Structure formats: C-alpha cells, structure tokens
Length: 77
Image 1 (cartoon, helix red, strand yellow):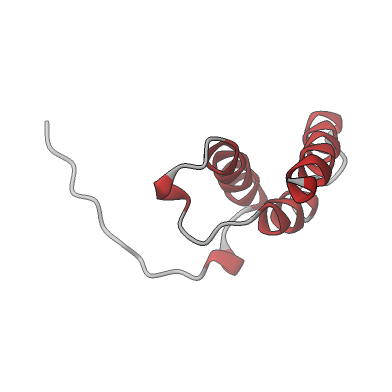
Image 2 (tube, rainbow, N blue to C red):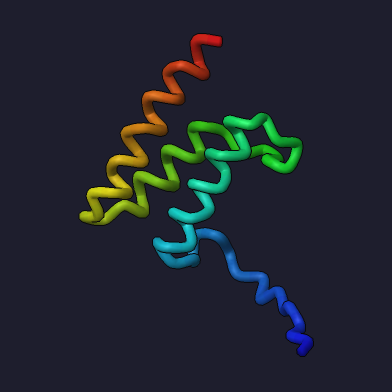
C-alpha cells in the first residue's frame, strides 16, 4: 500500500494544541540528546509551545514543570 505525503504548507501557529504539544515533547527529547536534528529548537521554544498547549491537562502541566526544571539545569552548563 502506498500513501502519498502531501505538504499542506500550513503555519505551525494554526496547528492543533495536541500537535503543538507533541512537537514540544519531541523537541525536548532532541535538545536533551543534543541531536543534530533539533535544528534551531531551544528549551525556551519548548516551554513556550508546551505551556500554550496544556489547557487543563495535569499530565501536560507536569511535563511543563519538568521542562522548566531541566531548563534551569541546562542554562547553568
């Protein structure tokens, strides 16, 4: 089975909260591993995007809290 991947050229800002949150979690992992695939993603980007996509979800809020703690440690390096 083949399924073509089509780029709809939509802006990230118009993505769903779920997509934004998932992207912030993925970026966080790449930053922690210092992956060359992280591009220009920064811990500040992760915090901004994740915090804007938490709504009232306690698990997402916990991720933001954990990312803030990691950001503090990363900044001290």
